[in-house]
Amino acid sequence: MPTTIRNLNLQELPLTDVSVAEEEGQRHRTSYGRVTVAPAPDSGALAAMTEPTQDSFGRRIRYLRISLTDACNLRCVYCMPEHMQFRPRHELMGDEEILFLVKVAASLGVDKIRLTGGEPTIRPGVVDLVRQLAAIPGIQDVAMTTNALLLDELAQPLADAGLSRVNISIDTIDPDRFRRITRWGDIDAVWRGIAAAERAGLRPIKLNCVVARGFNEEDVIDLARLTSENDWEVRYIEMMPFGEVSDFQLSNVVSFREIRQRIESVFGSLEEASYDFVDPSRPFRIPGATGTLGFISSVTEPFCQGCGRVRLTADGKLRLCLLRDDEVDLLSPLRSGADFAEIRALMREGAFHKPWGHGLAAGIFAEDRAMNQIGG
Ligand code: SAM
Ligand code: SF4
Image: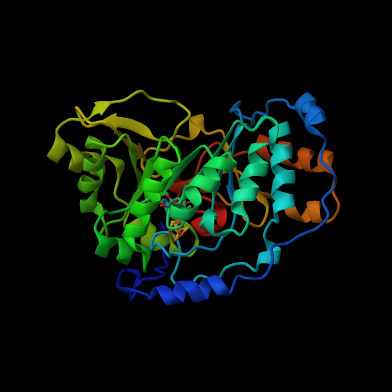
């Protein structure tokens, strides 16, 4: 356990007016980094060179999560400090660079990508980017994790561009508590976003709920109730420790077992639903419910054995495990003129050295970045 207590006052942070969010957004109106990247192979050549990649433990690497930006229009207490400093945009991957790196990943057998952040929907040009990503040979599935605030407008264009599904973060259905957790969020905008996602066919809809003691552990019941009539998966995520907010996060983890007990004390024993070994979420169902409940117990019962995920941070590092700081810089070599084969060799080598699992039990934390920079 870390000995220093940082952000001791997080729970008492004042609510912030939405104007601050807008102001924050305005600070990021510089353009993204842009260089002339080496040409990638054409579709035929890309398909011909594609081969599966495994790490040193034999896990197949096929899932890439990409942080499109570290910036966000919210400041969830478990994710980042209120006065978070974001990176200048020129340090972040430009569209061309993202497309290049995804082509490299596709040539190594990645077939599924998830766009995340920060808040992916605030990236200018996100719809066009999705369209181009979905057209890359070998990429079968482009999904997104979002706070849904902008989905009312964007869900349909994103679906038309080739986005297949969305996971939406909602930690409580109580408007005041939602505002407290997100520091200024309006829950009505999330409901509008969910409705728009449904209309646009971005299904199955999964709702992500991070449970933080003192904030929303009682709300797990109301969220579970949503599955009675909606074909949604409500997924409870154990809070994970990162960077500067790790002490707060560790001392306020609510375990999978506790969440399950709370739910069962109201709805009775949960039934197991069919289990996909690769999905970190263990699915259950309230008897008779339309939707399901999922539990992501990264902290107390990790699922590293089935993990085939790697991540691209917003500043272009290949992150090998969410909860470890091991990264391979891809953007700097790309900007220095490395060609497709060279970046591919770096990515393959990095993926091969993906660590077996996280080291939370041994007191090893990811200290270098907060969740929004990694792409949770
Ligand atoms: N802004 C988008 C959103 O909130 O859905 C995407 C980025 S967010 C970092 C991705 C997911 O990570 C969200 O579901 C969020 O709740 C979750 N998350 C953020 N900080 C976390 C933490 N410390 N532990 C566990 N999950 C966390
Ligand atoms: Fe923003 Fe998502 Fe982090 Fe909340 S969890 S602050 S919405 S990036």
